[in-house]
Image 1: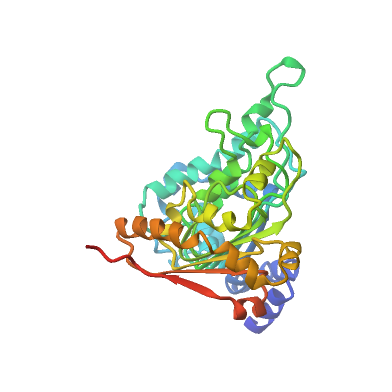
Image 2: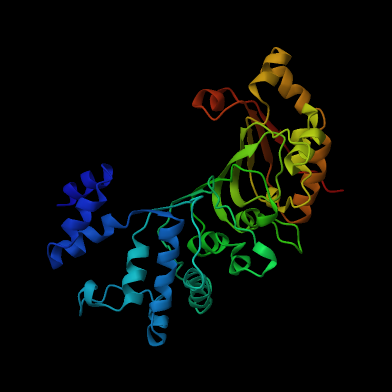
Length: 364
């Protein structure tokens, strides 16, 4: 039976696996860990999942994060929702969120569903540093490419319920990945220009950058950025951070990205721009930084050699790294820092990468 379940998981035959789960009480116990091993949410699924936490009764809230879930006095299917949710989440090895551009919130029902995020925070707050929401997670994939468009907050000059939903997808990211620290995480940022609907009027921050800032993992790949584009926040990696620039810069004179493009069009400024980031504290903790496709193929072609481009890019790096290493040392970080510039993410590019190692400065 376990081999059958493994084959169904490998074939992504989740409907068949769910049917097998429901055939008997014994199959329910056997199949459930396989069924919840790899979870993929789109924005609608994620919202409905978060809404489940509204249905946990007050008396059962303390049961949610209890570690003793293997009590055999009752069958899993007969346990309270809080216990079942906790058990299902404990089986999950990988968690994926794929944003949907066509998602439209329905007021007030969806606004209330998003309130399940507050319930999750309350549940987690009762057990600080104990029993994470997803205790077995190894890998997270967050694809925000199709970040939802937002409706105009003041149609016809009248106040609209849509104004409550400007940060609509942020609670999904924050609640699903709340306090998670997997081994590996991949984040793909949205593929469209920043517009007024995405921007906090008071802080000027975009919501998807703000929620990315709070994500943690040992090794993180941040993908989908525009070459010479805007990088507002870093996620928090412990060991390695890879930043992949997959898209060409926009040339719209009025766009935020184009301002960044004009500033960073000089090849030698791009790497320094990242190392001197005003919110660069996450760079204090990592061992290595990969910058992938930060230069476009046409730039390599114009220079005649990728090594020539990379050499030009490294001109201002030692000075920037000297300051960064001082900041790391002041924060108690005494590890060396390794930096590589790669044309792409292929194994060949990884094998040929030239790593530049920067040592901890000596203290007089």
